[in-house]
Structures are given as structure tokens and as C-alpha cells.
Length: 114
Length: 115
Image (cartoon, rainbow over all chains, first blue to last red; front, side, top):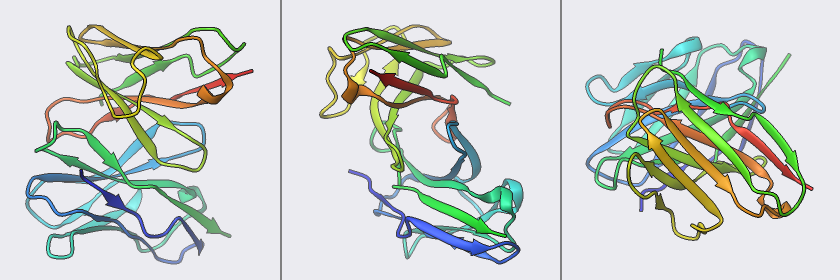
């Protein structure tokens, strides 16, 4: 089965500092990759996605992620975080060989410190 | 953009009650919807895949008779938690989307609290 690993469960970072949230997935030929953000008591909001093409994808709110096939990684980055970025972030993989289900990582709680 | 509406957002009820949660795709048709369960500070756990006009596909370990799924139209899927007990208390989220190369759109979730 597809697995998604988010190595950091909690990431505290000072406001205006850069941040990287790590995501690794088990190897598969046909996958699509996504990052979602979840604010308290809400559903998930799409930040960005990688389907094909350029390995550096840009999303909303200044976030970007880089797909690295050799390392099976899809790390999320932001050069300067804001207080409003405090939330839970989930990496997700959609495996086209197993019925199109989404598999989520365990999530990373980002806390921006003023 | 595509919107998925989930209702109710929060429900509190007594043990033994059955609770129905609705998931609607507001501006697109969804032949497939997904139901997830999320425990506090944890990730989303896929419970089942809801298929329009046919039976849902449940993940291993999810009780079919406990979590009834009906997908009677292209815009509505329902999850009914039958005879709910306190251990069923959780945050339930649905999602729907189009083609496989498109992201899923998520509802805002339903917080279920069983007393």
C-alpha cells in the first residue's frame, strides 16, 4: 500500500523566518502529489499540487514545493512565514494504480511564533 | 471554484442514536466521494469510497453495518453512523473531485460528539 511520511510532527518557527515541511512517499510510478492545509475545526484546503512537468510548483499563500523523484520527496517551503500560517499541514499522494484513493501523511503542526 | 458542502458541522447526541451526515458537491457532479475520519491531532483515515449508484467500498477494519453510506445522486453522498456510541465521537470529513489528475475538494467536516 502507498505510504506517506511526514517526519516532523511539530514545527515551531519565528515569524518572517523560512520554513520547510518534509514529506516522503513510497515509490510508485504513477502518483500525484498534494499539500493541504487545515485550520482548526475546518476541512482541508489545497495549497498546491504536482501532476507532471516542472518539479517546482507554486501554490497559494506564498508556498511552494519541489518534487524529487530520486528521493521520493515533496517538501513544502515558504521563505517567510506569517502568524496566519499557523495550522496543520498534510501531504497527500494519489496513487493511480490503486483506485485513485488519497493517502495522507500524519500531518505537521506549524506554529508561527511572533 | 468547486465547493463541497458538508452538513451538519457539529452534532451532539445521546448514545444509541443514529446520525446522518450529508456531503454535497455544489457546482459539479461527483461519481465518487470519499469519507474520512480524523482523531484529534491525527491525520485523515480513509473510511470508504462512495460510488454513485452502487455499493460503497470500505477500507479494511471499517464496519459496513456501522457506517452506512448512500450515494443516490451525482451530487449527494450520506454517511449514517448507526447506533452511535462515545467511541464513534470524531471529526468526519468528506471529499469529492473530478478526474484523477485533479485535487479532491473537501467539506468543512462534521464534529460528532456522542454522550
